[in-house]
Image 1 (cartoon, rainbow, N blue to C red):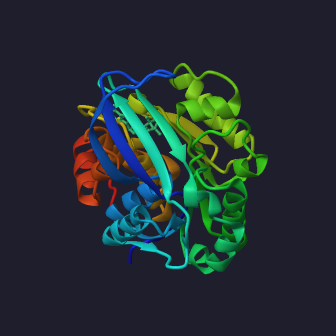
Image 2: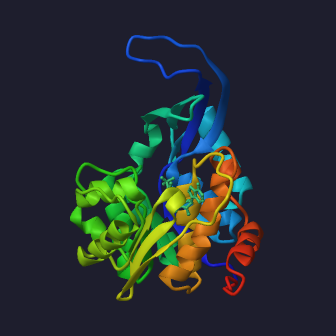
Length: 314
Ligand code: ADP
C-alpha cells in the first residue's frame, strides 16, 4: 500500500521566457523560447510525491480559466488527486512570470490569483483528507491562516507535518516553528534565524537552533553542498550526490517531497534526507521544474550507486 501524503499549497502556471539580459526598470528587451509549464511549490511537491509512489492529494485552488483547467488535468494525469470544488469562478489562476537570462540568473513576478483564495474553510471542508494522510506537506505560497489551519487539523489527528518555509516570510509566525519537521533551504534558514550560514558547521548549528526553537526536527538544504539535519538528539551533514548540474529549478521541491515520502514510510530523518538527496540531485541534473522531477526507480538506482550498502525500500 502506498503511503498517503496530503499537500496544502499553491498551483501556478509558470510562464518562462529566456532573454539575453534581464530588463531593467523602464527597459524593454526581447525574449524567446516562451514556455508555459505547471508550477507552484504545492503542485511541484505533489507531482514529485506522486512520481515517487505516494498516494497524493492536493488541497489547492485554481481559477476557472484555461490555465487552471489545464493544470488540474495535468495534476490528475500525474496521479495527484485534485478536489473538484476548489475552483474559483471568475478568478485567474496563480501565475509566475519567469525571465531567465542566458547566464542563468532569473527574475520572477508572482501573481497569486486563486492561491490567495484558499481559506481555512476550504481546509475544514477537506479535513478528512488531511486526517487520512501519514504526512501533511506545507509551503508558504498560500495564505498563512490557511497553512496554520491545515497544521492544526493535522496536529489534532496525530498526522505529522513537514513545512517547507518558502518563500521565506519577513517574520516567521512562531506557530510554524512547532511543526514536526521543518525544511528550509540555506537562504530561508538564514532569514528565519537572522544570520549567515557560510559553511556546513554553521548549517548543522542552524538545524539544531530550529529544533531548539520548537521544531521536532530540521533538515536544511544546501544546494550542491547537500543538507544539514537535526533530529532525535543528533545532528550532522550529508554531502550532495555528485551530478552534472543543469538546472536546479525544483530540486528543492523534489527533495521536500522525497523527504516527506521516506519519513512517512517510517525512515529516520537522516535516512529520509539521504533518499531526498538523490531525488534533489536527479532534479538538478535535468532542465525545467515538473519535467525534471524523478520517479522512484531512478532515485533507487542513483542511491544504489551512491550508497551501495544503504537500503531505501519501504
Ligand atoms: P532550493 O532549490 O529550494 O534552493 P537547494 O538548492 O538547496 O534547494 O537544493 C535542494 C537539494 O537538491 C539539495 O539539498 C541537494 O540535495 C540537491 N541539489 C541541488 N543542487 C545540486 C547539485 N548541483 N548537485 C547535487 N545535488 C544538488
